[in-house]
Amino acid sequence: MRAVTAGQPAGSRRHKAILQALPLLCLAVSGCSLPGGIRLAAGEAKILVGTPVRDNRTPMDPALACLAERASAKQARVPVIAVGDVRDFTGKFSVGEGNAVTQGGALMVASALGKLGGAVRIAERFDPSIGERELGYSDRRQLGDGRQHVLGGTGAQAPVPWLPYYGGSITASDFYIVGGITEVNYDIRSGGVEARVNSAGPKHRTYTQSVAVDLRLVDTRSLLVVRTISLTKQFTGYESGFGVFRFFGSELFDIGLGAKGQEPLQLGIRTALEEGVLRLAGTAIGIDPGECLSKAGWISEALSTSSPLEVRKASDPQIAKRRHPSGE
Image (cartoon, rainbow, N blue to C red):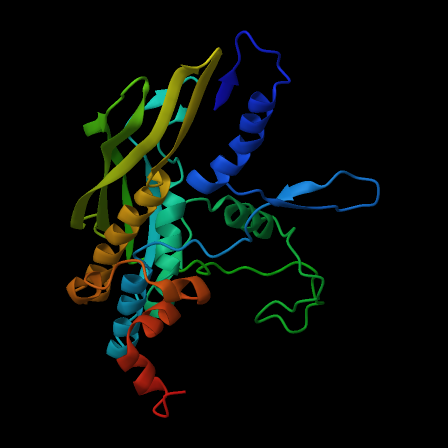
């Protein structure tokens, strides 16, 4: 937003009034807000502080909580699932902004498995470097815990300061998940309208893009692919505004007001990966996730809960009634 004057001094009353009104127009039209600030030490300038940290919620939280609850009711053997490399295969990159999509797909998949609670156990295979290093220390009798240990079967021997290791401490996985983000399609559909009369008028535009993820569940022992999943998601953005570009008397005014927004791309990728995890985990557990998939979606109670199971409980009064017959 800007105002340019011609033929009048910069300090004219009309010019000053418009400049003073522009911040108010910003607040009223486009929803601008002024963040607060805090001073961390005496004599320091205040630093801007935005919203507080929160749990990273997605529309799949109620569905994941549903599967966790169904698995606990089934009381079946809890499968051990590992996460392999789930990375970006799109190759989309720009000099100014770097990679177009997240490089943390494997981390998102592991977090999605964590939202299932006790329905599955997660075996670390993505970065086992610390565990492997400490096993190497144990093999060289260098690893200790500050205590003395008596070696098994040799009670007469003096205690040793290093941890004895006889092998077999690492739990085997039953399945692992691998795959990647395979598509990002820009501007698959766009449209809009703009009208101006005497260089003044509104405009509105929309645009759509999409991404796709491909995952597979693999049996760790046989290396047979148990199930494959291919999911896609569209993202919609918009831009709207109103502009004036014209002379009023001897003064030229160029004023633009508007707003634009887009569904977060990386959040959408996380949501797609979580749905893939839900379907693959259902296969590993032996439960059809179809009923739980129907419960995916944003719910207001998710903002005040601390776990996916509580999100599911808040969204289903029957569950709350079964757990608390008094209704409290």
